[in-house]
Length: 396
Image (tube, rainbow, N blue to C red; front, top):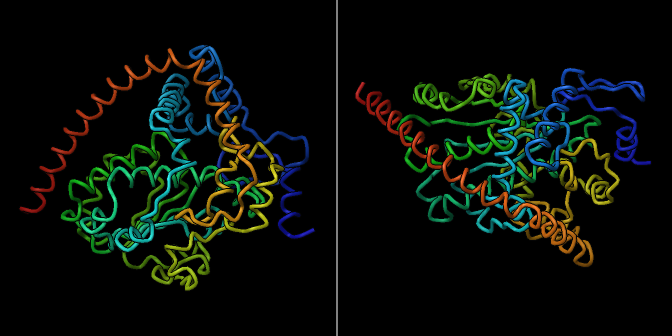
């Protein structure tokens, strides 16, 4: 039995804790869930059922993330979760996850270097953005703001459906959050243009509202005095729970990163040992357990423990992921499965859901339009306030 298969065998006997990514081994048959969490999740499930008349996918850990976001307030957590379901439907998230192709990926990387690269010392995926190298004008000549938002959602879905399960197998424990690094060298208040503000607000809204509690830690590095002024304004858009996970560091950040990430999983530009020459650089490699053929075969076989998935009612890793490329530009197809079984299964599933949800969808759209109008008004007011702060900062 290979080492990966041994880990997988171990996972079959493991009982997953409910909070966090790190858990100790427990004897077989012993529950690792916190009784408080069990009670809160059950209450949330019952509240959703009472409101909806039927249960959407309600995976334990997914519901727990929304409870964390709302400090265990059942009504607020339910409201956030149902808004999340409506957003997935209206934004066609499942379609993006299966069909979206970011053909301009390599060109975009020249002006917006970002991506996943390896894992931290606990086995979590590491996400990196080199914001100081962003050239937004050149970037928007290669793509659009709309496609950048779809690309962001695509990567979030790939992380939930592929990266987390693959890292779980590799680490031998439940992995459900990322460690992120944001390199802001050279960024100040003048760097935050109208388009940059839009992307920041849109990404922040999506991550906070629809993928809550999936950030372990964010390390902002190379933060100069200009960025620190900007950061005081930016952090007002973040909830306190997320803001507490962020650490702002200056140019002496290497020892801190080395504490949480092995140098072999850090690009050389961040003080690590990796250059990924075979991929044209670290930001193009998408290096990680999610590209390990043996782990992918385990996921492909459908033998994964269903308790480690993030979405109840949808496969941990859908055939769509395995028939598409394992790197971001979608050209490989080396794990393609014969036939169109997945497409047919998804079509049947969608038709079944559509028959039940048609009337609810019209009502949800009306609510969503009202909420969107209110959100736009608030964003407009916040942007005006931010512009005033920037102008005062530049004058001073």
